[in-house]
Image (cartoon, rainbow, N blue to C red):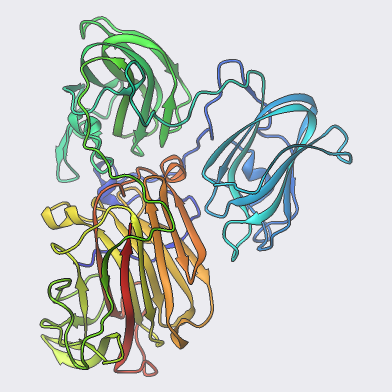
Length: 579
């Protein structure tokens, strides 16, 4: 059940979208995004202005100017040290009201915002030691020509700092919340559009999108989508509407676009599904996630697209409407977020069996067969390549062995149909093998894969991958329809030689994101809001099952050679899940 994954790489915002995830299997592109929507009286004053920085990660690349160019496909990145700064020259003294920062994964926990009128004398406008990355909107007050961020504490100690956009605003500081309401007391805004009847100008139903019907935009499932027909829907205008069941007072609309987004569109309301009034209009749509804090009254709400961003049509993963009234249906409740450090043990295997005993069949499903990803081994049935060593450890052994037409064997097992989890701390203590072409992994697959949803729509969470050719670095990566395979959202991180001892990999996962750790050190922070605004839908709010395997060869680790040792062993001391 290994999916055709791999080659996760440090996020560079290429937005390479797999064929199956893009309209007619052909869409990919660079998109821009305003970090946080400006209120009506605000003016963005930093875009295109001269910017400088203490350093760049690579000479001639990730320049300071790329954080003020209005394009979230480019970014500034610093050298890999703790003390850094970035500043922008507004050109004239300006009354500054707000700073908006869209962080890359390498965000700052500690930083200050400073103002100056002469680039030599500075006053502090804001300070924090608990920055959380993602999209930050920081109200400030003061007059400045020069605005500087002094960066003092890294979230990822192996790297420096990086952000897609650093934006300075002047004017009204009243900015509505950038995320939908999460609780629904009487009379307050709630989700009105879930599972409501939907219509569209056209919709796609073919091998590339089967089906991409209008109801998919209102199912609260970010891995399904609506798309206009590939035969007669790649035209303007294109629209999708929903019947809220009764008159509603609308306060927020959230659109999560596929790469086939609208450059120009309106949000319209109607009382009779025939006569429409616009409550929002734009001619500068930039795709990904639009959070629109707008007001209107109607039973029907429509996105009416008038200018496509490409030769393709229109497509939305989700079209969510919030407000009061209507006739809402509650979506399935999500589990409560765990409090970290999580301490309630809900699954464990300590591998304490006698020497030669096999993995516990009440916890693990053996997963034999021919793998994907160009791997050359055969995963044997009946745990032939896995056993306890009598010292409290599972041994997964890759061998040079003729089997079922292949010359190498190994082992893969998972907890499918026996244990799955949504949210918590998932950890394993592992010692990996060294050798060209070896590929140990500890990872999770969305359990809807077991009921027929194909990869990558089910989601994949790679807590640990190590390539035997270089056991002094590791990878943690997410895979979803809009970011997968070589375009997965992940982090490569340098470390000690992992083949010399056991190390603990862990993921702490809740409704706000997933944080990855190696031996207690944060190595990657996948923030949900950042992903939705820079890569695409977050599809990790459902149950996943656990997988352990040792692959041989393949697209990611490369081939084995004469130096690769056989047998090679991956040792697992324990696997534990806490909530």
